[in-house]
Image (cartoon, rainbow, N blue to C red; front, side):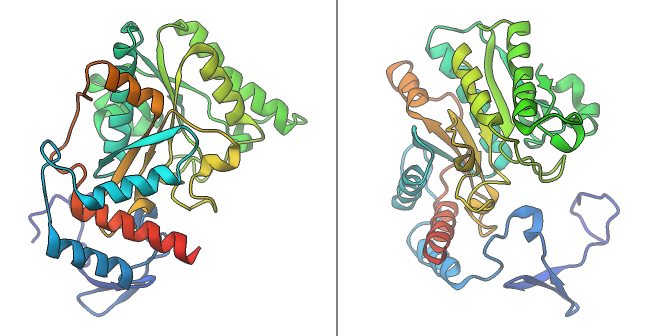
Length: 325
């Protein structure tokens, strides 16, 4: 009998006792090829010696210090690395424990940004149907999967959804990629105008869609058009690269291949490779400056944000990815 509420309430789960490379091992000696790296997490496989060594080293120094009172060398080093390799304009990092937390933080940063700027009337979030942004209430409200949202709908903030850029389902016969990208992006401008250009906070999208539609890349110059529309109306662009980022598409950030930079970006999964729970919200200078010159603080926080062990894992994983290409 288990006292854990597993994802499936009546599940009889094998007990994992070890892992090496692409394999996991259970208590009965069975081995399993971890072909998808768990939930697209274990980008370096299991038991990587360099990451384990880094975790041992950090544990011998310091396991925890509250970020309301202290910073740590390893958290600062990870933030430096992430800014160094980030899209243009990103210059600060908010370290959290996973992807849902990173999205929640991005949504709240986006709202507070406009409050700090003297535009508190902005309240609308636009995202896409058949998207997935996490399971906390703000992230779930932003995501566009009707089944996941249904029973929690009375608890969710109001959000708005447009069609995804999904050529397999939505591109018309004979329509060029460029024309389809323009039509798909136009859905965002239409929704902004419908809601009121001075009422919209942000547009949220997975650069490459992950869990809900399958692996769906953007078409042609779709994201360049999206970036231009956001700029035209002063709307923030939040890119969710929790699943598709940190090297998974061949560049560290998927949006590099689209030639765009977001105002806010959520990363996790491949950031720490499963060695610790870690995620981050990357924010542009204009977001930071609004906080710095305004109230002076971001009204948010978690007990384990910037955790030294999590930062050590993230830093070690990123060093291995860079070193080993």
